[in-house]
Image (cartoon, rainbow, N blue to C red; front, side, top):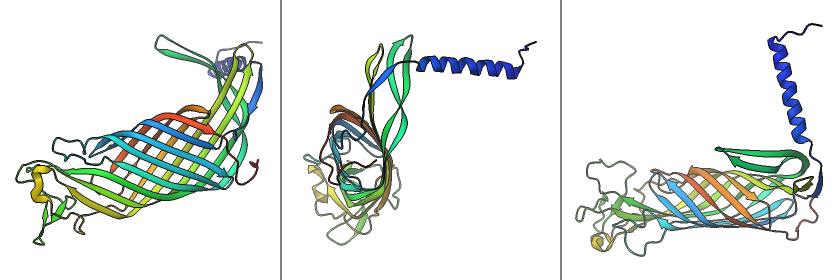
Length: 331
């Protein structure tokens, strides 16, 4: 029988070789020790680094967050963020004692999906680095994962710092800040005395609503020649619409801008953005004490100009098991 190296035969040979290598990489004897995605239902996150970047400002702070999966149908969520470095609040001409930006959310998730699924878990057996490359050996092990999907919503409050740049070369636009003096006149704000930037804050209060998707895995195996290895993760994706009908502006002049003390900027002539949005991803190492990281992008309500933002944070997570208020976890 004559065998020619035509293109189909070459492809077939290459495919068989890849399959053989794949089978060889999977030929590791192991025993499952734990397979319990419901091992924890309360996650507390202590993140000392949380940076939020806007087109008009950047802040670095901390983030305290907790998610309690209280029952099959409901989750409780709390999220507090506070800056310890705020570019707009710490400028050369900023007044002393100016509060730095902060954010508070209190809400929950109503689950419409709460199921256990048998899925493949990636279990890393060994990894090494060399020559600018990282080599990883892993196997795929079938195990249970908790899939949760729900509608989320709650209370939302933002405090953000802003400033009026004293750039006389730029013409005013409809989005620039206006102030109402004691004489009743409404004028665009610009420091024509000291030629310094002018600080103001925006307090936005309202609600958020969106969708929340979670995948929880906790699989521990004992691999022959490798010992105990695991796949322990929580992946959380979410997207929200933000609505803050209550937006208050307050002028914060410095000591040399005392002539602005009686100027009111919380007036209807100043435009406000009541609607915003965000999408985020939160990754958690599913352990009693572990690591977490999160990222968000979106458009924050409040000041309408330059409202797009990106948030990145990471820190320590604490995972606990509490009594399920809805009874046993369902399959």
